[in-house]
Each structure stands twice: as structure tokens, then as C-alpha cells.
Amino acid sequence: MKNGTGILIFFVLFILSASPAFTQSFRALQVLNPKVEQGGVLMFKIAPQYMPPAKSAPSIFIQKLNQNYYPNKEGEVFIGISIDTKPGKYIAEYWSNGQRDSWDYEEVEVIGKIFPTRTRVPFVPNNKWGREREVLRNTFDTGYFYERFFKDKFIKPLDPIVIDQNRTIGDITARGSFGTGHEGVDLITLNPKTKRHQQPVKAINSGIVALVAKNYSTDGNMVIIDHGSGIFSIYMHLSGFRVKKVGDWVKKGEIIGISGDTGSAKRGGPHLHFAIKIRDIQRIQDVYVDPLRFIDIMNQYLDGLE
Image (cartoon, rainbow, N blue to C red):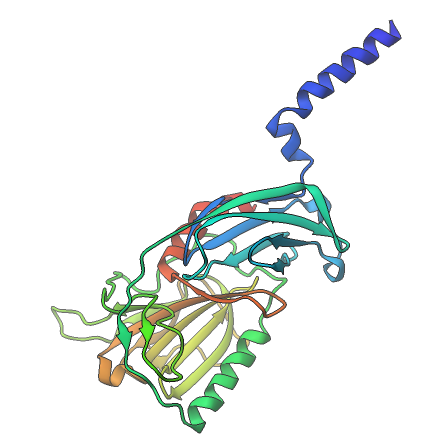
């Protein structure tokens, strides 16, 4: 009788182990969006029981990208997919204590997307511009990577959203040191009825003010908000600020500034340059993603992060 019971239990466990739900419950790694477009964000979740203290945190290694990505303290990993990431299938492996878990991995697929190739006017940097870039690098380097400051869905920075189709993410830069391309989207702020362009700009989610930049060469007046987990939102060409200093807490929907035509917008016309940057704690991954698409993707999968 005992032998028969043992065989029955073994048989039931064998059947359960073949079930995806049973297998998933014992896995450390879960991908929330296994298909992601170029310029999007890839999201992983590491099960709580597999999350040791931060100093010995596990990581995700993605083949072909040849990089480890580390989670925040909630076990979440946000990976920016650059617009030039090669389309195709990638294997994401779970690593712990310097070793790969041979069976715990996920397959993800990067989908190709067409981006504009408008050639931008070259820019010759000066010393002031160089100092500003150093401030920006330090701002992103000292971000909060283990915290997640947002608790619910993201919103758009303007109401309504009107995209300047000639100034979307992905443009090519002509010879010069301006950068590799347009790293955000330009949102039209001119109201055709009132002819006014100064619109209130909202924080897309909760976070900490990482930078309040005044009269930068190309960016003009700019606010950067650190949302934690290596996610930053950037708002450029403002005419005025509604935040005071670095370190201040802002709530989702709080007015952080007024749109304007400062910086390079003096010659290009008033607009809000809106961008999202995603970095990892090692500061190796440094990706500007399609910001409006980022909001859509995050809102679609945020429920899966709880």
C-alpha cells in the first residue's frame, strides 16, 4: 500500500512538473513582455524568494548583448532597447553567485521598427557645452538604481499631446559632436487658437528632481526627474520652472515647468523636447528610448510588477 501511494505521489508530481504554471512557480526569472520593438523597454521580474541582499543581487545576462543587468530591490529589471539593436531573438539567462542557472532562462524577441533618418545640422561644441555635458553625466551616474519611486501608471507631460512628426526619435546627425541622433520627441506647444505656446508641463510620474538646468546651450531650461530603477524623464526648452532644487520630491501630474523656446528652440521654434533615458547600475547601458512608447509599454505591464 505504501509503495502504491509513493508511486501515485510521484506520478502526480511528474504530471504537475510538466505544467507551465507549476514550472513557473519554481522559476526565478520571468519576462513580462517577451516581444519588444526597437526603442522600447524590456521588463523582467525576479521572484522575491530569489532576491538576496542588494550587494549580492542576482543578474540577468542577455546573450548577443553581452551584458549583465541587475534588479532593483523589488526584483525588477528595466532594459532600454536602443533603436539600433539588431532585430531577432535573444536569450536572457538568470545568474546568481557568478553562475548561470542552466534551466532558468527566457527567450525575448526584438522587433524592427522604422525610424526617421532626417539629417540634423552639425553642432560645434564649445567649453560651456562641454561643462554642461559633464553635469549631465554626473546627474545620470548618481541616480537611484535600487529604488522604484513610481507606484502606478505613467501619464503624458502635456495635454493634449501633439507630436512634431519632423522631430521624432531616431534622426541622424550630420558631421559634428552634437550626438548620434534625436534622443526624444518634440511636442508642439503652440495653441493655434490663442497663438500662445507656454503650456504647463507635468511630471509623468513620481520621482526626485535630479537636475534643474538654467540656460544650457542646446537644452535651454531643463528639468530631469529620477523615477528610480535607472529611469529618468527629461523636459527641455522650458520658459520657467515650478520645481526649486535638486532632491525635491515631485508627484505624478505635478506641474514642474512651463514650456518655452529656450536653447536650440530659439531657432527651431517653441516646443517641448521630451525624452526618457534608461541606465543600469553599472552605467554601461545608457539608452534613450521612444518616450511615448515607453509610457504605453509600462502602463500595459505595470500590473505585473506588483
